[in-house]
Amino acid sequence: MTDIYAGCGWSRSHIGSCGKGDIYKGYGWGKSCVGSYTVSGDVYSGYGWGKTCVGSFSDGTVYEGYGWGRSIVGEYKNGDIYKGYGWSRERIGEYVGEDGGAAAAALLLLFK
Image (cartoon, rainbow, N blue to C red; front, side, top):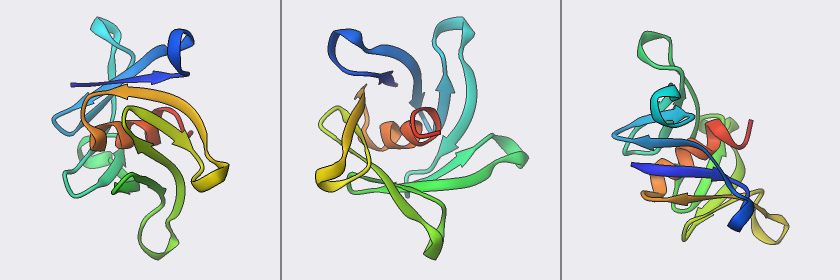
């Protein structure tokens, strides 16, 4: 299970988790499933028959949208989550666990 945090260092707060292809908002008994992701990098909002593809992740980059219309919204690397990319990126969160799961959760929990 990968834990997702908003903020950095001592001021960070736990906002969700992900694992086995599911993305959860909150933690403990109060958590709720808000989306899912695939090993190939697709990210979905919702679950079951009503889910919608909202983006993807690949090699440290998080994309919003799908296909030709997708755009870069962030990056993830070594436990850090960034909004934006390159020199203009801003560190907005942290994760402990799997990189791909963190990227998927960041798209649904931090970039909206």
